[in-house]
Image (tube, rainbow, N blue to C red):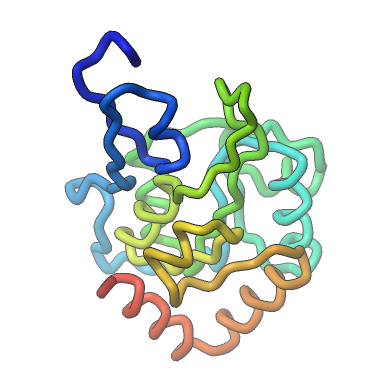
Length: 186
């Protein structure tokens, strides 16, 4: 990054690693990520690479009968492999899935590449912005920036907490609709 006049990073915790660095939060492409009113035929979904933490959370949802699909992996669990629609899909297909999904689950990655100092991440990822822009509700693993930018967004730390939040939102359609409205307005 020292070769550039300006560096933009989406996580404030990494600004000191780069000369003349500036914070720019994640965003989405409004041409791709928008709610077009498509029927939401999937209750709960996840798109992203596999890791043990993601497997634990997603398996808890699957075991509770709440997980509709996953994309990505590789998944060790036969249950998640059965729910897997594809190993990889283009961004446009991801947006289509988000438009058809009631709740998109966000579990952050475990390994942050090129992070020899072990700096704890605080930033949100594109999944949150993109899914919200597509009209899905998001339930996310806790992280500082999530609470700061979207304080009403439901957050979890434990598997049972995730299951309880998702089950509650699917059972209370008004709470789900209100959550979507609040996040979209913000």
